[in-house]
Image (cartoon, rainbow, N blue to C red; front, side):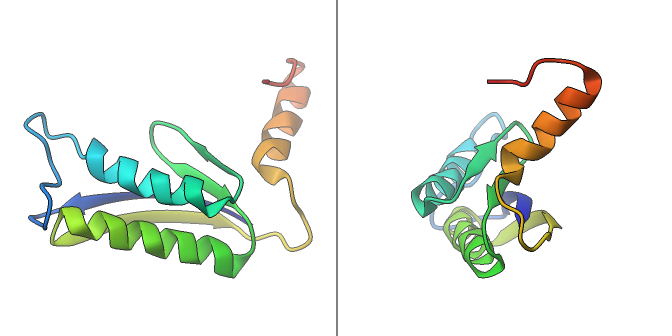
Length: 109
């Protein structure tokens, strides 16, 4: 499965969730560290982080991310979208490659 998610703090927590500019980048960086330490295939862009793996392992990582971000605020906002397709792997890059091929462009590195 692929899970695309975004997690951010709100309110006050043990650590300040928002810097003077309104950025929550410290909290998001803590969540992305959890993702990378998981060992699951992943990709982060400006809006979402996408994981690839089995249901239980993906959801465990999302939960850990929410817990880490919870230290930065009294609330956590989570946006999640999943593509559940049993028996398929390599879709983190495979889906993009198929679209690029359909557009006639060389695949991204």
